[in-house]
Image (spheres, rainbow, N blue to C red):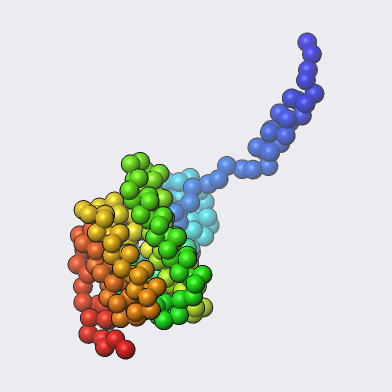
Length: 266
């Protein structure tokens, strides 16, 4: 019986590789983050005890504590000696921490309270960002905004499958990020990267639920044109209209948090 030396070498590599890499253990941090962001554990609720988690996931107590520390460091839970770990109020969460925004984008879709908080923040911030972009955007910025808008329109008209709807939402996010960058303020530009997961969350859900996508596209076009024509006040109001459309699609009240409702526009 003959042996293929190359095949034997390849099998040896596979076996050796499998010996070097122990199977990944379950992540308690991911498990609890999903449950908390989805609203199954509300602020004030206690999450399962360390011993219960050890038994459920068949891992040792130090591993459980290490994972819980991730949630503590993110401001999401607090450890109370003798009682366990309790979910903190939303205001205590480190909402701009990259790990928190990643969890938010992946797990927060079913939680309207978190959606409402993100929407309120965007209503306070993005109209001012659009207004600043209308004053500072250069030719390259305008090209980036227009390219994102064109992709938004193209994928809206062709959105007949999940992949095309995903591309539509990605272009929508790119549109908003391009406006942040057009402010030519390094803090706003960096903030756009931090906020991207939370923007993605609302954009994807609102696009899926929008009753009239063409109206949404027109609102985005008005933001783009206001920036292109150097009309800061119009850009401010157009950005508000986009987010009010988002609120409507999500079935959320925009609320009175938007500063621009009672703020004089220079």
